[in-house]
Structure formats: structure tokens, C-alpha cells
Amino acid sequence: MKLSADQIIELENETITLCQEMIRIPSVNYGEGRGDEKAMAEYVASKLAEVGIKSELIETAPNRVNVVAKIEGSDQSRPGLVLHGHIDVVPANADDWSVDPFSGEIKDGFIWGRGAVDMKDMDAMILATVRMWQRVGYKPPRNILLAFFADEEAGSDYGSRWLVKNRPELFNGYSEAVSEVGGFSLTITGGHRLYLVEAAQKGINWMKLSAKGTAGHGSFINPDNAVTKVADAVSRIGNYEWPQLETKTSGLLFRKIAQLTGDKYDQKNVKPLLKHLGGAVKMLGATISNTANPTMLEAGYKVNVIPQSASAVVDGRFLPGYEDQLQETIKRLAGDDIEVEMITRDIALEVEFAGPLVDAMCKAITGEDKEGIPVPYLMSGGTDNKALSDLGIIGYGFSPLRLPENLDFFSLFHGVDERVPIDGLKFGVRVLYEFLDNI
Image (cartoon, rainbow, N blue to C red; front, side, top):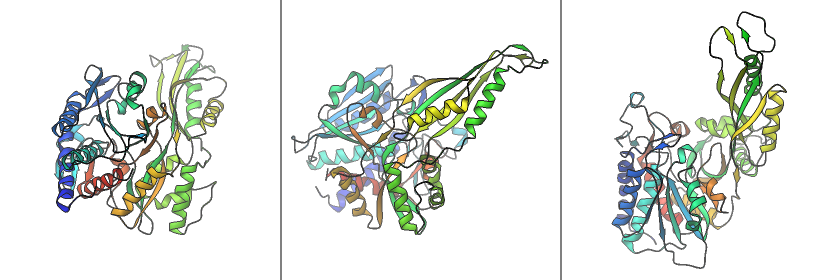
């Protein structure tokens, strides 16, 4: 349903207000079960109730609260779409910020605050869109399940994973999902404006490396030193140059970049193309290979005592289809003296950048930006789409934003002075509204 000019302005302005108000609710997730989304969940439910949308608050642990609501579509014969966001945010140290991180302040054309891009901006766009539907009496083409999840920032055990395991009936009849970290613009060499739609995610292998040795006095010569064994393993892993690998998604992206810039595409070496990506190289540069970063070390209890054990933790991330390569390489680099234990594993995802849902995304973007070029990309992290995939739901990242050319967007995720451009947010809600009108 097309909106009038006044209704579009109303939609945009409400998105800004909702985003500010949600930032002012500090739904901080500290990890290890310590988080509180209750006030935020109640706010979302109240905004839905104001326009007659019934929702369910699902508390999975004290103050760990999710919100779900169903909106009936005009065609009941088609499977529905899950439209989801998470309502928790990572902590923010106010002393490091130039504004109060929970102020939702407007400054320099941006809304500032923790969650502005991760992901209360998208939560605001979703809420503003469905509230407008109710005001104008509109039904979307398909059933919509609104899901505002807790605990995404610490593994989703109290959010999407809990609901998939304990309330799977909520998702019956839904085949696709749309959520965060996609649909935003990236201006590359030549002024070409790409819109990156997330169609793939790396998987996770967090591993503990352990070594045993002979304890002894720190003044003695000790060739069986557990600390040395772990240090050598960590050094080999941390300095290893992983071979470049192509996936369907990365192949489409880098071929397009080569085409637009006139640069050469080499399937075995896309590093020369990274120079066209600006600040986005932080994430996209990590998606051309598996990666493994040592992040934690533990050994010893006194400076003059050689301990009999030592350990390290490695954050391994694998491309879709290449988990075995990651594990085999880590074991080889660690060496025979090191025990490798998997402590956390999560799947990789990759879906086709094709079909009616993707067509609707592309049409919505180019309808607002004639020069926009929608492309798929592979994300180095993960989203709640991983949990939904356990139910066979195909997920994409599509929270559209048109960004200033010089904005280092990826550094804002979990970063100091997190902020979202107001013009970009207005653009985003117009695109999201158009997209959902054509699904």
C-alpha cells in the first residue's frame, strides 16, 4: 500500500523517536547470564498494544524477556516471514564516549547511543512500519511473525535458541526470516554505491589448547615446560596465513567489485580488491579465508615456579563448507604435545542470493536509490538467523541504511560513540516498508 507524502514523513519521524526512546532504555547484556531486557521488552509490547497488536512476553530467566507477535497476512496459503531483531546491547563505558551512551542524543545529523546500529535502529524501523500498517488498515501479503529476541549479544541462550528449542510452535508456517547487518550502503572506488545484503555467515569453533609438562623451580633448565609448549602453539596459529577460499556469496561480491572498478578478479587471490572497500575491509577482509585468533592465555601461579600445565583459547571462524579445514589445520599447527578441545561450536550459513524475497529487497533498494547496486556478502560474525535455521527457516540480513561515503560503519558495531545517520534511518524505513509491501 503506497503511503501519502505526509504519511511517509510520519513514518520517518516516528522511526527517529522510537530509536531514541529505545536507546534510553539500557538493556545491557553483560554475558554469562547477566542481562536485563525486561524494560525494553515491555516498551516494545506497549508500542504494539497502542495500535492494537497483541504480543506475548516470554521470560526465559529472571529479567531475560522476549517479545513475539503475529500479524495476519492477506494470503494465508503462503508460508510466512519472521521479521526479527534483538533488544539487548553490549555494555558501554560512559567515560570513553563524547555523549551519554544511553541518551539517544541527536548531534551532527546522527542519533548517538549504544544500540544505534546494533540494533535498535532496525527495531525502530520494524515498529514504525507495523504501527503504520495498523493506522492505515493494511495487511501484508504474508503472515508476519514479529520477534524481538533477548540475549543475542551473548549467544542467544535466553533468546532465539531458547524459543527454537522450547517454543518451536511459534515458528510453524514460517519459511524465511529477515533481520540485522545487511542492506546498508558501501561506497567503493569510483563512487559506486553497493548495498550489502547478508546472505552468509561464518561458523564458530572456539578451542582450548592445553599442554602438560614437568613442574619445577624457575631457576632450573626445563625442556619440558608447558608454558613454552603452549606459547609455541599459539605463535604458530596466530602467525599462520590462511589460504584464501571462495564461497558462492564471496564469489558474487568480489566479481562485482572487480567489474565495477575495472580491476582483475582472481579466484585464488582477491586481496588486491580489498583496497576498494575502505573501512569495510575490517569485516570483509576476514571473509576470504578461515581465521583463528589466540585470545586468552592461562598458566602458572608464582614467578619462580614452572607450572605443570598451561592453556590458551583460540577464536576460530570458518567459512561455509570449510569447518574440517579449520579443525585439521589447528590440530596440525598446535602439534603433538597440545590437546585441542572444542569449547564452543556454531554453524556457518549460506543461502542463495536469488528468489522472490531477494528480488523484493533489490527492488526496494533501487526504488529509493536509482544508483544503488544490491550485492550479497558474507558476515564474519553471526545473528539469530542461525538459531532459526535449525527449524529450516532461511534467513537474510536486511536492515537497510544509506550511509555517508566516509563513515566507517563497521567500527560502530560495539564501538565507542556508536551512532546512526538520521537521513540514513529515514531512507532505511522507506526501503523496509516498500520491501515488506512486496514479499
